[in-house]
Every structure is written in structure tokens, then in C-alpha cells.
Amino acid sequence: MVAEANAGRSPGLHTRQQTRNRCCAATSAPTSHRHLMSILRRGAEMKYAVVIERTKTGYSAYVPDLPGCISVGATREELDNNIREAIDLYLDELREQGIPIPVPSTDTEYIAV
Image 1 (cartoon, rainbow, N blue to C red):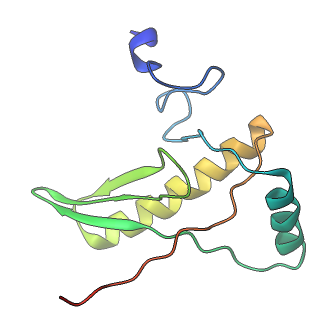
Image 2: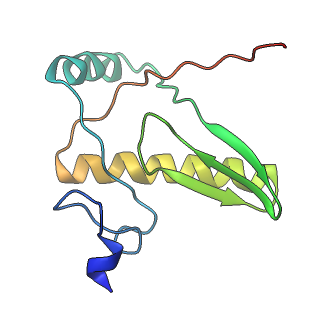
Image 3: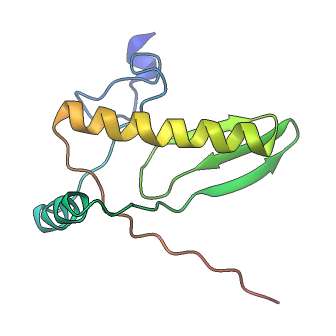
């Protein structure tokens, strides 16, 4: 079962069960990491784009800049709380594993057609 759960994942990364919804499959260039550390030292807030989709049972969301960081909720309020927690856990796991924190780079826009 563990082999199935880890299928397609990079070696050394934990399954969602092992990390209590912590997902960690990100890499970043050293210069990006230095830039991020500079931002964090200044106390600036990082903002990650979150894609939210309506489902038959509520809502789901994922963070394009944090591959595998996803969450669901029966209501928008529940989803908002859950995805914030998922992002926090994801970033905590990256720190614990010594993996550089990705600098937010996804941009979003609505296009009227």
C-alpha cells in the first residue's frame, strides 16, 4: 500500500497521511530562495494564487505554486480555512525537509468573452 501511495512521487517525500495533509514536491532556484529570504526578513507577506472550484459536494482548491497542495470544504468558509492550513502545513514541511520555499509566481486574471 505504501508503494502505491508513493507512486509517482519523488523519493524522500512523505505521503499525505504521513504529513497530515502536508504536501511537498517543490523546488526553487537558489537565487529565488535568497530573494524569498530577503522578503521574509523584511516581514513582507507572501501571497500564493489559489484556484477554487465548485464541486457537487462543496468546494476544492489547489495552489499552483505549491504542487500537490490541495484542500476541500463543504462551504467557502470551510474551504478558505482548510486551504490556509494546507499552505501553512506545506511550507512547514518544506522547512523541516530543508527544501527551499517557492517564491509565488502564478498570476491570475479573468478574461471576459
